[in-house]
Image (cartoon, rainbow, N blue to C red; front, side, top):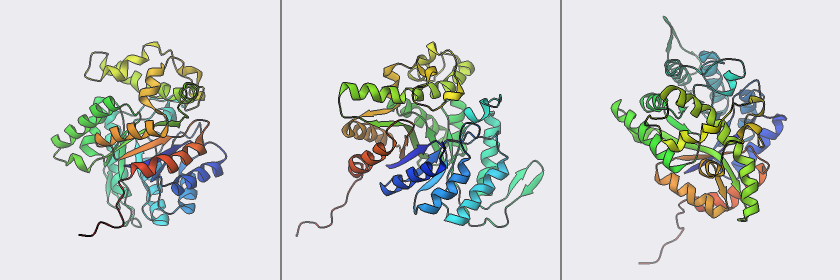
Length: 345
């Protein structure tokens, strides 16, 4: 299993770049960022700097959306980064949350999401795409390679992911919900005549290493409770569309009963006052909290479900120490080491 990291583009940008460099040093495979241009700085500018100071990490948004950027410009940006730094990008995309809602907009339709994936992936991989009646292609991007991974929770987006995406992003670390979403994505892939094993699976959630004490766990929960509020925005959309009696697991939908709105000025921020409705149980299920042994146990559980990458949301007060702890106490034990020598026959 790969381990990635998810950063906010909070000023100064040099700090974001430095965290990315530290992550690569510790063996993290991917550096993702939020893409919400009103709340934080422009991620694609920062990607160029991350790629310039690293050698191997793959960068991309978790996630962009079809509404706030022209699809051809998005594809051109990725293809340019690939030409400059050697195909080290991935496009995470969804219907949209903070990037569109802060502007008074609504998430894109599933149809628009499907169409945008086709345009971005074809152009980003050096092929031609249709924009209405016009066929277009980047004449300079023949060698660009861009996988497109789709983030979502609801049935229609999960089906779309199985039908067209290169990867699936689930933004929570609950094994039961992960099992349901992964099964739905794989079933859709099979119906579409695709090999489900070819779809990469990424689970992303806050991770906080504690000393094993009750006080340490309490602090970790307060630092990560915001995440349940963020997920709640998407869950509220699902409940509005499908109601409470659909096949969407109640483990995902029930907890938003006490939700009373959301302030995007506190989006993704530890101590978010609009996440008070999120109970400890949800924090514990959606995030990974505890000692390195606790983290390793959950990661093994996710790996057994077919998860290829766990991406650590690093929006709390222990950014550097979490990277260090994962590098020293989690990643080495998560690997499946080979021995240098064997016994003589």
